[in-house]
Length: 488
Ligand SMILES: *Cc1c(COP(=O)(O)O)cnc(C)c1O
Picture 1: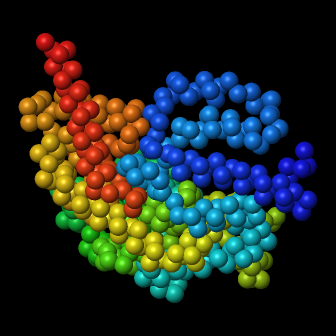
Picture 2: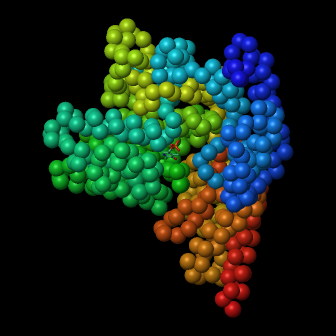
Picture 3: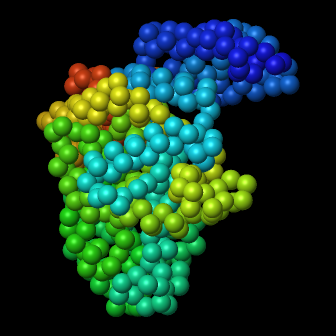
């Protein structure tokens, strides 16, 4: 069994084994003609169920054959130009190379004595990101498992900073008094974080958005005012720079003004919009982000990085102390005096992947402009998609894209019952998924079912968008035709 351990005597086995796996994936990439096979849970579950995990095959080739059957054949493929659904991106090759290196070396970024150079590489990428944001020299941050964790950590810091001592507020700030303000289309991890942080059920105040799906700052000002009047504490405002559903970007400069005025922590959730930090054309859309106290970025959404790759950035490094604990066995306090850089001092995690290496490889091979160019391309494609949808009488489209998302619904002229239109759109999404020809997402707007394209693949063309719109219309019409038959 020792022959399976990665070490000096098994280097050749490692090379052959990993190469064999990579060959399988490469063959899949070359031959995949649809983003999905349309496999059902019922068809797939028994294939996995019947495998006896206590009877190993002892042979890599046999296991890869089996993997083909239980996973590779029917996986959802994000590199396919007709995968248009969620905020999960096709990935760039330098990042995948980084992934292969980091898991083989298996650095753990919690302590210097488990990573060495890895720690410094991560720190340099944090500094790079902070420069792009426009933070000053006291900024810091840390890689996280994803946007949800970044939001949680940012709000933890905000909660601690809102406690006694925060300018203008009484020392009576019990958790029940703390309020977080976020738009009605902010990410659900804001509410989840509030719960994890022990804040009250009413702690997240939902601020309405306008037709453009951006937070209404007049309403925000009114709620902040009310909060103060009621003797409550405005702990944080979460501005979303790229909402998950619409890609809309809250008005960051106005929100920054209000945060300053009311002494609230400004968190910018740029999990999606962070790609603009590398953009050559559209960086200005997130101007004002430099005034935040903390920022969430998901490189695994708009930097074309494999899951996971994410970070939380803070304007003032000192605020990260709220996440610091010392353990004798790991990061004893004396190491701070000895200036040994232990990233665990800044993180909610202990053992932690060297995800930063993927971004490092990407920047070193492609450069930031390369990433920005790819993101600009998908944003431009969304603009083309918007024009197509707006000109198409079969469709209603919600909002002109700020990033790369389109939300729309099929509206046949002959059908007036909104519930029937809902059902036709739901049916079209399911039928499309079952066919595997394309994958699209869905969401609700004003209580009605809509469909959604999240465009993250620069290989997708306007022709793909047109073709998928025809497919959707075809499925919806089929549903409505059958529904008429049922009625008669
Ligand atoms: C995706 C997303 C998150 C959550 O990020 P994960 O990496 O999925 O945990 C948070 N906020 C916004 C706006 C997002 O789009």
